[in-house]
Image 1 (tube, rainbow, N blue to C red):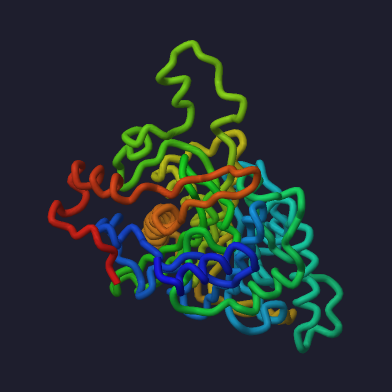
Image 2 (spheres, helix red, strand yellow):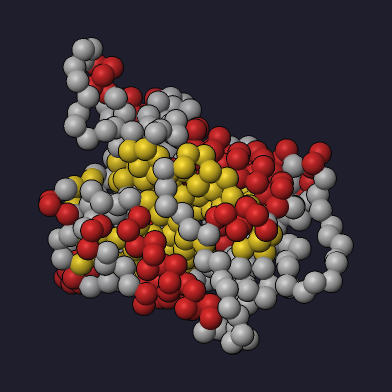
Length: 394
């Protein structure tokens, strides 16, 4: 390791950072795998939906703080006075998401979507509300519905310390931008674990064919859940010997381990530029759970699986004047459903392959998915070219 990278590594251990917490990001397509039927957008990210922005605030402090904030802005303008149509689906409700009931009731989102850890939801709500009220033009606003999601990173992070501050939340919101999105052990994914390995933030997108509108669907996940890892249909978790209830399966009659295998959660954010109604956005959000299932999730008892979906079209300026909307009919939704499933699935893969091994609270270590072994498994299964280089693609 060079002196430069040694200095950077030491710095990351003692101060909060914004952006990536690793020197490189290896995505599943870097391994030669191209899951799904539809191709991705130029960045293979949520931000391929024009106008959508993502920002992170990563907190790595001492030997116990491994957490952060990820913020999604549906557009860079005034969200309160230019709301976007939206919907929420709850796959399993073991979670502490804020603001979802109003989204379900009114079908709009009026703030950035913020992701963090379970015990810092309150801080994130307060900071998002304050930030919105401080925006020009909001001087007379008296009610704001902040949308905040969470997963529990308490194994690697001192979650009881509630280390996320309002400044961290604002930093994530104000750093949000389009283009490539940092993945893995960053932002709200800094301390997460998924499917037996280090989890994190992952994202992906799909482009529909020109004949079907050339619409884009993007997904971003905060992966922190259990299951039996499958990648492109290959039972990777079983072949690596790490999966939920292994002790039950391989040692018949033994009691389960004290810590339940089926704990964890996943937050999913969907974006599209297709002109779809909140009702059909909710139908898309339901299909995101099918993408999660493809990765090996079974939506366990302890998993809080929430999907927030929005469209950048047919915005709501807040006036009381009726307005006509140009909406896709139900018969045109199936391709968007498939794009949703594929983007969600690959977003999880990217969260896993981009994540790094992290040691945190009480010395707990969560290993990153071993990419060399993963390549071998995928090659043996015929999913990637046997001549594929082991080196990540630029």
